[in-house]
Length: 443
Image 1 (tube, rainbow, N blue to C red):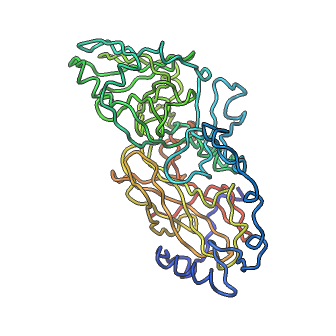
Image 2 (spheres, rainbow, N blue to C red; image 1 turned 90 degrees about the horizontal axis):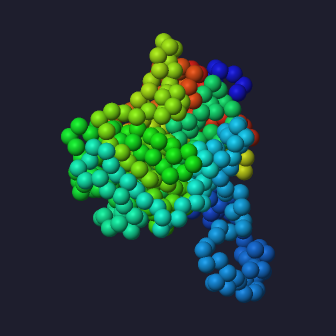
Image 3 (cartoon, helix red, strand yellow; image 1 turned 90 degrees about the vertical axis):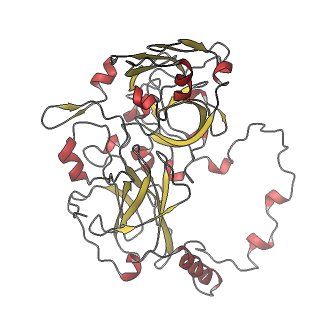
């Protein structure tokens, strides 16, 4: 970060105007067929005699791989950089209690492939025999039960799309920019289509006692990761899931069964689930009471703040995907992800000058509660310095704070629930750097 002062960038009328999708395609067509024009879609014009067209492609001169070579499909070898990554700073050198970061800068749409979904383990990845797996539901219930996987699947299933986010997502930035990488900044989250039974369906079947107020969820792995959840959430939208993106859960995602607690802290989404106990009193593991809290300037700590706040980040451009390939005058799409653990994204604003002025972006694709939402803004790259920021608002009118607004409320002593506005510095050369703008103009 060069300094903490807001650098004001004078925007021309073309940059301030959000080009419509129809205008974008009209202009793209013009540049594609024009004799001299270029665009973001067609940066290099090829003529009909280019060797890429005239010569037969090498892969077209021989038989391809037989269909039985990879009976479980794998990505193209050319996509070898699109992988999860880890870092010693995020694991203290312990690969059993560690995290791998999702490459969200390479994500398309709102579904993360199973092989790229971020992982967080406390005692390694358990390898569970589904034939020996059991789920016990007991405590303040009228009919305690123990379910096999086959019996669990007899309940009516549902399929829903939700993100999971570690409450420490963005934690490296708690005092200032640390990683010049979107993957390591915000890669502690992913989104998937989950299939399972709603927990309330099971509870309607076995019955809850009137004084059941809390639920303890416990995994069957080495760490067990016990977590306390209010019954209200259990009766709302918690799922007992056995499938992810149309197939059985992967071992690192809790095979054969895990909890999905939509919108709430990722650590509550217990993997390798084995026990749900209901009580009139809360349980609190040492980790819950000492770790997942937020110390304030007053000396008091916030303990119960399960839901992940409204958030957003620009994924293109980003440090991994700069604009160094663009030419002055190119049309380009600013794209990103927005999400909220308390509702549905209502709108996202884009700033080109670090927060002095805001322009509403377009939401595209599915807009679902407690799910990733894509936003987009078309602009022309003029080869001038920019400070790109995004600011999301959900249907409960929760809006992302600035860095200063966030730290004034919760200080800088906690790594959890950091949802302040993220800003990228775009240099004249199109390079993209992680910076923090400390003095945002009030909206």
